[in-house]
Image 1 (cartoon, rainbow, N blue to C red):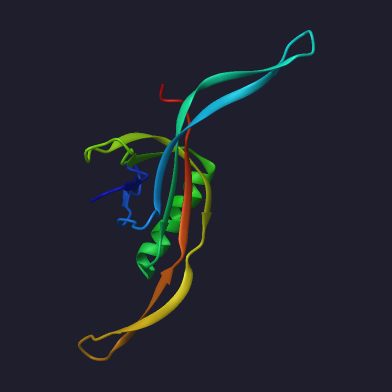
Image 2 (cartoon, helix red, strand yellow; image 1 turned 135 degrees about the vertical axis):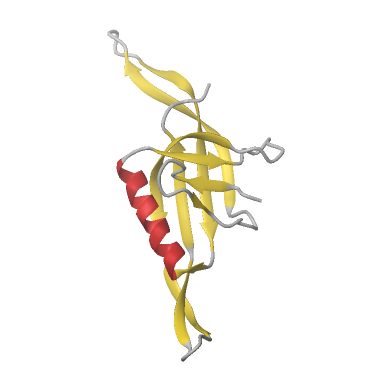
Length: 139
């Protein structure tokens, strides 16, 4: 089942299904602290925004490179993402997100892929994590 699609208007990267708590979606309150003229500080609630964390363990070289490109783009500008909310029956929601943090995948091992003339060694990458936050509150 698709849990997360990054940059649906550009790279359109469908991430593999994460298991064992590697995909978490929660609503977080977006608020600002405002200092009143009397000196009191009050917290003004702006609304709730989706916060997504995603972890996955194994990528091939092409997927890793595309993933890093999408994450770099999302650090500098909002990207449209499709995500599976916690109360969904399988329908994805779409919204604009910023990449708050991501870890570069680490080299795990290589595998030999048999080809016509000779075997090719392909690297496999793992331990990737991503944190997204919705740009504007959805309610």
